[in-house]
Length: 347
Image (cartoon, rainbow, N blue to C red; front, top):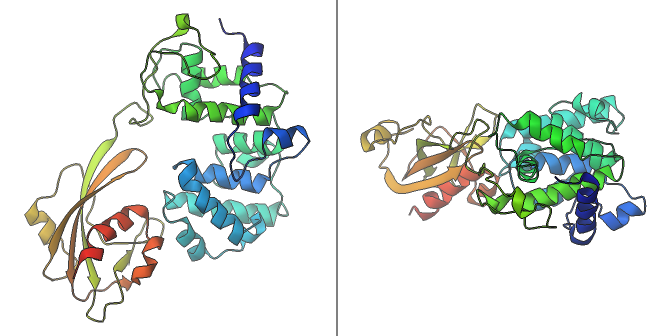
């Protein structure tokens, strides 16, 4: 049986010594001196980290906070500027929610984030996890901060055999039992650090490799969730074909088409479906008449599915928005891969 006070003491001691140095974090030493994290920076980082990793999100975070240092600055941003800055961070619906939330904080709360979970949940696009994270880390509220990685740690600590998603309520309740009034912000971040550092254990039948928190008698199978969706299904592969008419004779650069979901620019594609495209099907769906060349395929993994895109390119004219080659970095990452696979090699 795990002793919760001993577990908490061990994990907080480990966090004091091993806390990650993150651009948005107020470390445990500063926290003990009374320093608090900026709610804007905590919120922004949590939104960015929903679909990417710390190494990938950090340059975006630094760029955002340099360009828009406060939530009021972000609220005043043009939609197109923010969308371009977001490219590569995942679904653009989150970028739209980010802007809507910033504008609500600026206009309805005087540029000050609410300091409770309830108040944070009332903001546009702020879900239960983000509200709990901001409440705990920025305001030291006793909030239960639980994501998929924390669920995995709870399953290992308490030998929960029930698979996700059926186990979610139990895992959240177990995590809630560990939350106290003692350093709730540091506790949430310590648990995040432990969860993310142990995420690669997969199905290994061994205790967590930190702190000796789980004894040998408590070892058991913990399901590898990394390649599953919330219902435990394997990530679904999808196929599409992408035709890009990359440059007219005056050659300003690759074209983009306005995409209906999110209004972002992307290279023109077919529909995505659960079967590969044949050569005949790919050729029949070309956006303009041209001598198309096949540049192979690129792979991209989204949150709950993987995508294989066949890349075709040609020279010619088309009814597109034309993008300078040096502006390729503003494309979403899946289209940037395709552009590099074909457009950059077209002569």
